[in-house]
Length: 191
Image (tube, rainbow, N blue to C red; front, side, top):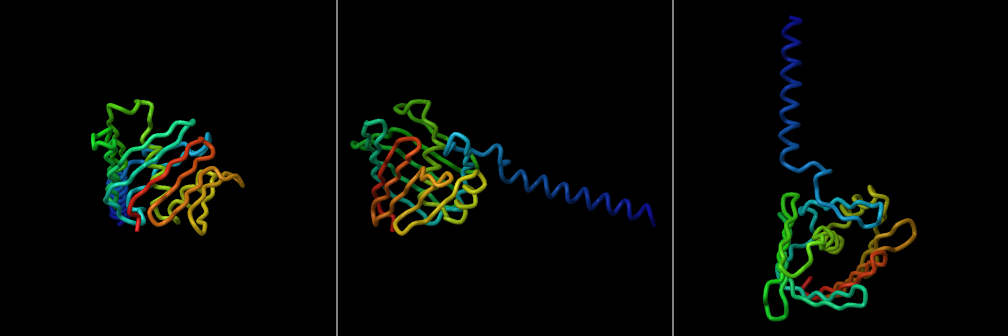
């Protein structure tokens, strides 16, 4: 009888181990997921696409300002529960680059943008704008930041200092990163 119990316990532990290992294989381990440093000490692990609030599929005009330089491009964005896909275009419709975030993996290709451009930062800003507030709040709290929804947008704070502000209006979203010194505006149909 004792030997039978040992065999049953062994099979239960073995079965639990198989279930655990197979569940780990379906999603990459958290330390292997793409991330962006929102501050010098706050490593934001990109959220799974299932956390998106609203499906997007259409063009956006992006106007960016960084170190007193202005940039503008058109981006076709398709984002849903399976991932984020962006095609970056100039005013003439020529492809400048493509970005994809799916299954815990980011890919970015461009012959125009420098290799130093980390697409994780683009995806992080996108998630701060378009992903579920509760999921963002939990993820930011884990890394020592706080998240607030305001009457007309969102804020990311480090202690009491606002480091990122996002302002929403019907067809315009403005992102100001006070810590990193950049601003950009997204224009499109966000309704």
